Length: 378
Image (tube, rainbow, N blue to C red; front, side, top):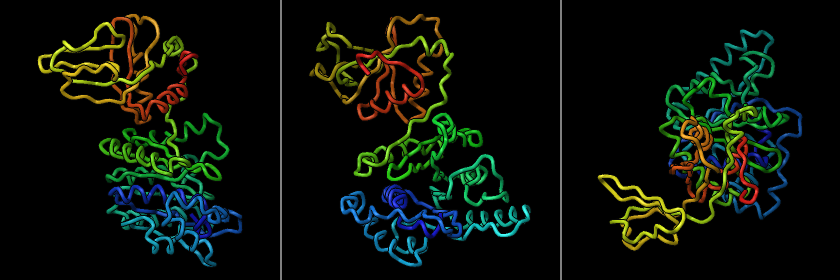
């Protein structure tokens, strides 16, 4: 981050995301990764502030940034004073690259980072705002390393119990390189759960969340809610997937099919009201309950409780019982993208159900992972 960037269109999206989370009870700490201004044109993309239509995303942030962007000596301290992120704490010491001696710069950065640990110790979520995102090639003290967050710094925040989100951008990366960049931090934090939110105004700006497993469901729910706000027009959650193995014989031989209609998951008194002649009726009786999954249109009257709004994907054909890992591979792709599912197995095949709100994202995630759908259905 540079002071000259204050009010830039990227600033608007960044504060919109963080403000939303703060208003939902997330205690946020901001490490600006502040570097000195330069003579570039970066930070001058403020024409959006002349468009009153953009105010709808967050009128409070819009008005404040419109005022700050016009200041001659604008700074991150002005942003802090404007309280755009309710209850946030900040670390605004400048990360300098003074001097030519590598070890001296390493020591300076270590001291700088130690101070950030102290200043942001009470934050639940640490937001890091480096100029160029994260680097896996540069080390502290090397040329231009001050423009990046280092993976070991993400690890230090994470290991003391904090969740982390850091700015990053695709830049000139290929699609495959970008897919790798989104999840490469997992080489350092194996249990970290990843969510990537991308702001699509101007150049692509992404925010990579590294979350503790116990916190993942809560953040997943909050970010799904965020996408339903006006911000959802210009923000999206990115698909997370491993690079598909084009030679995987199991995946290459699986064809998926979208099952039309909406399903309900029910608990029933008994099965007397169930029309078993209708297609896609799945029942399960245990010593504790009578369960039913069926099209919503034919839910029986003797239903005790129900959960509507489910959609289904079917694995085409007849699956041999000796095949291993087919369903697990598919559900792993969906789990990596925060999509909750449950599966139903029949003699012939498997059905995967997920909520209607996540259906489109599930299909896209599977396609990116290399799965194919019947052309008539997807």
